[in-house]
Image 1 (cartoon, rainbow, N blue to C red):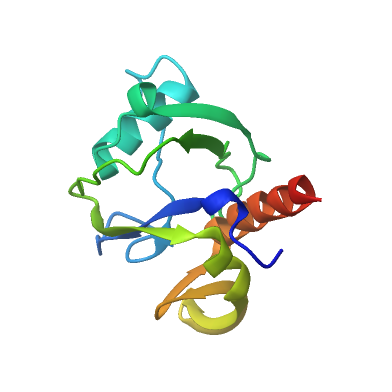
Image 2: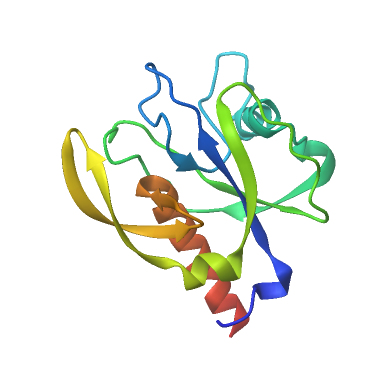
Length: 158
């Protein structure tokens, strides 16, 4: 797939550094944990996206589908259900207190910047599959989620 499928872009976030966040400082997708006040996992995602990047998915998004349930490398007991939303336009991003920066990445840029990178995991340097985007390293669970989505897009184009 050489061209960006239908001009698609993905919103990524760079998490701020926090002692109580195991993914502190990493690149990721907007989303988060289900809280007692959430009526469903979908409601939790929509709340978290509003809090992290100021986008109201109920108003401007349309849920397209679910990706495979997975877990972060260090938290095998945690189950994460990625949901894919489509947006007709790129709404204004308003960064919340847990996010250092947020930016849209064209799918074509992800496809052309896939490789590996060295990261520090529990004090040990390891070579991991990664997307290398403008000096940023996207790896781990986020890399796995994006890889699954990119494969679906590749199949859909053929």
